Amino acid sequence: MAAFEYETGSISDISRRLILWGQRSDRGMARVEYSSEFARQQVTQQLQAALSEVGIAYREISLTSQPSADRVVADLLDRLMQSPTGVVSIVGFGAAFANQSTLADDLRVLNFNRERFLAFPGRQIWWVTPVFLQRVIHAIPDLNSYFSPRLCLSEVTFADSARDSTLLTTGSTVNIEDARQRSQQLIRQFEAARRGGAKDDTLLTTYLLPALGALAEVGAQQELRDLTQQFEGLLGSLKRTDSPDMATSLGRLASLYHDQGRYSEAKPLYLQALEIWQRQLGEDHPFVATSLNNLAGLCESQGRYSEAESLYLQALEIWQRQLGEDHPDVVTSLNNLAGLYKLQGRYSEAEPLCLQTLAIRQRQLGDDHPDVATSLNNLAGLYESQGRYSEAEPLYLQTLAIFQRQLGENHPNVATSLNNLAHLYNSQGRYNEAEPLYLQALATRQCQLGDDHPDVATSLNNLAELYDSQERYSEAEPLYLQALDICQRQLGDDHPDVATSLNNLAHLYKSQGRYNEAEPLYLRAVPILFKKLGADHPNTKTGLQNFLMFLQKALQENRIAELSDDPMTRSLLQQLQDASD
Image (tube, rainbow, N blue to C red):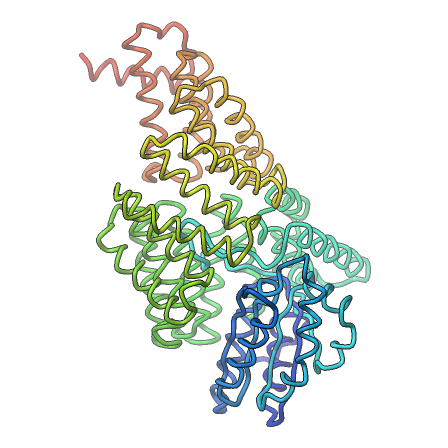
């Protein structure tokens, strides 16, 4: 196999440096600044595999919020001393030291105990985000001297469908403003490198794709779409070489297209990335499983459920065989498979998988970890889908309590949890309980994500649906219109989510008898679904059925004259009339 160059700050570069450092026999502390959780996981996977080959133990410690900084430090020291001599990765500093009002004092506690950390006989890697690092260096600048090496994982990528696909995840390690600044910095470097005569593939893999990935990771879809369109020609010129770096780049570009609803463009890139990993690493490597999982997620988005299931099962089998039954990637795979079964209404098959992921996470992380909350939430969502409301409600409440304790009242996951609980109450007709939760979720998302984020559009749509179901039409309409506007600007006019928003607004107008306003919305929504998802996708069938029900109502009320002469309208009306004769 040919040798590959390592770009400073890339996954390959940081992995190589940490592998060499981790093989030393003495104690030591390394610090790695990172802005992408998925990129960090890629590094730790390579590090763990390399250390295992030479018999060096590897363990990861995830910090969580505690009543005081003293408790955080005591817990970490205790877990370090229980770890086998080798390499220990430590994550979660931002969550453990999240109280801004006491942060300066909390960091002094951390600083006061550093000699005790240094006494640990193994080697430690402290993973810190740029925001947390800036706070630490400002408060205790001399702490910097205790770390050797001090590295920066500048490559920004994201897990796409490898992350939990059912309802929600534990969230990104960076906020939107961090991501924008990082993306802008990479674009400036990109322009400088292009002026300096850098090759197209170098420009793409080193600067442009990480810049796009930074935006995708936090859901800045409009900026992502604009930047993608700006450099469409360069993205299309990506030369296909048979290297792991190229497989990573192809997978990253495929994920960007997937997020934008450009499924037909994403698929060949996912397939090419999979083929490269298979040739370079063999059929049974965890990276192959990740590639299979991402391709499965694309198939799921397109409603190709049988293909998605086969790919998910292949990925699960590889991860179980290579990483063990309790590895986080195995847990994610089980969760994705459960989500697929839930979509298909295969509830009896989904439930044991949800219970299995919950049990593994509770055993590994304890009952109060955000990942445990995610599993509780997903199980609650499964029960809600089956109308098992009395079983779903305590799980949603437990989820919300964990997120509030561990992540704070204003975290986006708390907003998602509030939204899910409100949806449950809405489904039961408990409107007075649902409305304040929807409003609180909306306010949190607007505060944390900005007024134009897709999650804000989701909250607006949910609140509008609540008002719609109560026939509070004058309150629902402006919310539906605002949600549609955000979706169109952020995702583009032909994204499936735009079709859903159009359909919701059309339903409102239908309920009010405003047929001449509802029809053009259906006429926009249905073609988008056919184009993007295909005729066999459940959402396409639902969208078409909604339009047919609208036309049937117009027939029954003898209001056909109010409709247009659009060919689709006339064709479907003729089918309905023929069926009734």
